[in-house]
Length: 265
Image 1 (cartoon, rainbow, N blue to C red):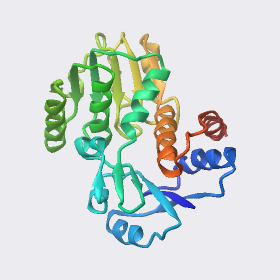
Image 2 (image 1 turned 60 degrees about the vertical axis):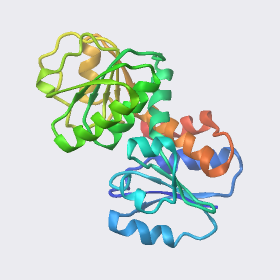
Image 3 (image 1 turned 90 degrees about the horizontal axis):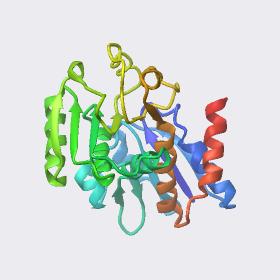
Image 4 (image 1 turned 45 degrees about the vertical axis):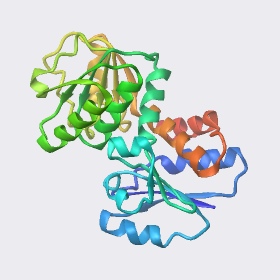
């Protein structure tokens, strides 16, 4: 059976490393590749997948475009407006495992319950972070973002979840009294965010995992906070995909070991 991660660019993806390690651990004769696909190619690629395909993982810029090929949506995919997994069968079902990945990464880092959260960014991952914050118990979220359209989408989700959301520019950020901060912006964007900050509290989950530590993560530690690396989110969301693709419980220890070995090299 076959699966793949689709996106553009895709050469940097570590998803093949994680999934293949799982197949090897459970003696499964499956394949998992990285395929560079842009939004206008997604439909034809999915249409060309035969019965030997289990499904596909999706990264940017395909997490919204996937709504055009999914026959059915899970509640998390629907509320976040984000699909990172398509599972093939009688119908193509769109899932969001990013929320699970974010929650499990926080739990593994010792944060199982929060009241306040700050989210840096307002794109697809930020929408998943909003739901993750709510699943961790968050009631108050500050969104540090500028894109008015994306902010409106996040505000709508917050309303559905019963979250009190405020929006501010990063220049007004206060990290001294927050339980959890999730950086959802690409590598380098948030590097200077803590330039004038001397003290922080709570956990920083930076979804960037390469290079690690990021400048933001290093500065967060210098200011007295704790950090959760983005590769933990990557691992746990991939494990959830593995379950969906194979119908088996993911061998998390072996998948983690393969990921960490690759990150060290």
